[in-house]
Amino acid sequence: MKRVNKLAALVVFLFLLGITQPLLAQTLKEVFNSSETPLFYLGVDFTLARLIDAPEVASDIRDRQYPAINDLIVNESKKYDLAGAFHKSNIEHDLGLVAKRNAKINTEEIKSTNSADYNRLKEEDITKLVKGFDFEGKKGVGLLFVADGMSKGKKSEGLWVTLI
Image 1 (tube, one colour):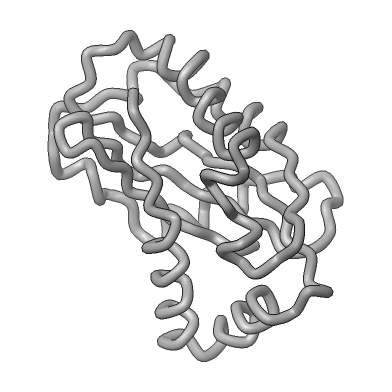
Image 2: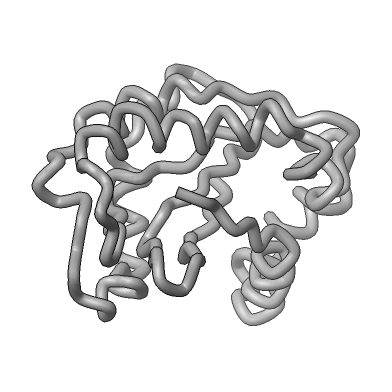
């Protein structure tokens, strides 16, 4: 499975969201402009994701490919420059929280043949997902990507970017 990273588009989306959401604007301003506001990368949560028209075995997707995607983002920090995108000199990370959640995904719910599943999640779904996290006392602002739909045909992935 080839992953297409649209980090620049996600950053622009975050910026625009901050402009249109006055209550969120202050938080985004702090995250982007303050080197004192720590940012902690939590990984990509795939628990609600659907992989559209994928021939792969669902258990392989959950057990091998999802962890590999999370590892790739951290291990290839020059290619996936989260620190640069958020104007930070360093971003701490702990993929353990999402790894535990992703490992429990029901393999019957991973794959889909419905192209409408690409953008099926709503803000309420993301809010509910985030409320279900145990952040284990971590401090600072958490950065969590929530995978929505992934399309083999389009070679793209829809992600929600959350600052917690």
